[in-house]
Image (tube, rainbow, N blue to C red; front, side, top):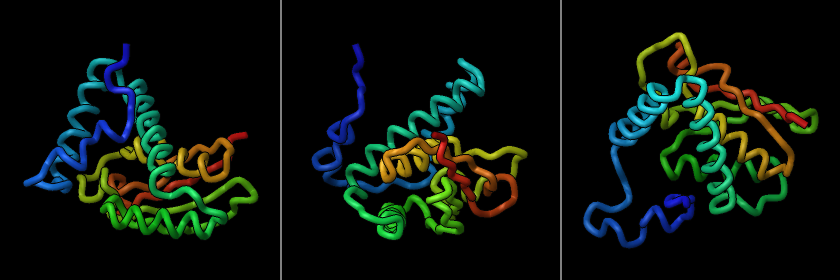
Length: 169
C-alpha cells in the first residue's frame, strides 16, 4: 500500500502554514534535497539515486505542466508561460537557446537554478532532478518522448545550467 502517492493535496498549501506562509529559504530546500540524495546514494548507489531523482523530476514536471502550463498551442506560448511560472515560483530563469523542435532537438538554459546555482565546483553535473522535470514538460507539451541531458552546470564552472533536450522516439 502506498501512503504518499502524489496529489496536490499532500502539499497542504492552503491551510497548513497560516503564520509562516508558503515561502522557505533556499538553504532549507537544499538541505532536504541533498540529505535525501545522500541517503539514497549511500543506501542504493549513485545510479539508483540518479534514477530516483530523474523519475521524481519527471513526476513533478508532469504535475507542474498540468497545473501551471496547460493549455498551450505553440512552442512560443509553452516557453513563455513556462518562463513566467518558473520565475514567479523562484525556480529559475529559463532561456531558449536553440529551437529545432521539428527536428527533435531543443537547447535551453536555466539561470539561478534552484538546485545548484551557488554550489561549489565539482567535476560532474548535479541537476538530475531537473533533467526529469524538463523531459516531462516537453513530453506533456508534444505528447512524444523526450530526454533532457544537462550539458553545462554551475557546478562544472558554466555558471548556468544548459540542457539539450532530444526526442527519443
